[in-house]
Image 1 (tube, rainbow, N blue to C red):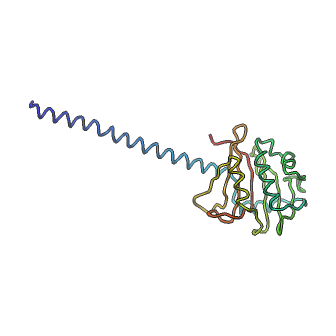
Image 2: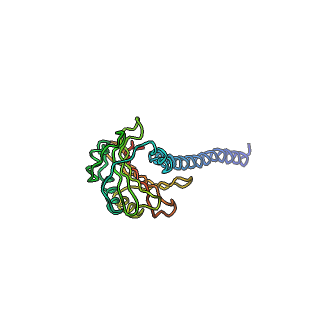
Image 3: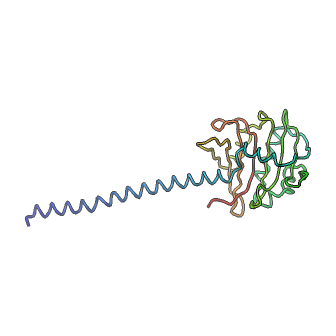
Length: 222
């Protein structure tokens, strides 16, 4: 066989061997990128799932509960301070028990007439607030702690809530699609738990007003 022909065949053979290798490398890079994207999407979905139902859904559920007993008046800044105190003290399921929550808030949280929730309702500026502690379902390992304000124009400063939470090491998750009006802050707690602080806001893209704040401990998404 002529030397030039043999050389040509060798070059073609090496090229054919190299080509699949390059394609495999590109595919591997694409697979890694897709995996990273999927992991971030799964993490975001887990954060959303662990947070509270939408505000409108929660209000529908609340119609099944009796009213809370009357509590003291609080200023907006005092309510914000109470939220930050809870965000620092809720580290385990035991910390979310009503007796410990009322100690952190510095105010008694009596049972409602049915004994299904503990909390109070009082005035806050031109509106009213409600603190409530309860298990949203029999399968819940811990209690939910929620502050809500009425009427719709009664609210807390979103920045006053956000800045100290971020300073304390919370991360912030903002939904990128859909009509979910919640912005969720989250931070690892003790015993493989994560504390979620879900805030219902006036508008998700440029929030100024926080109307409902739910604090819940959920198993961490490892």
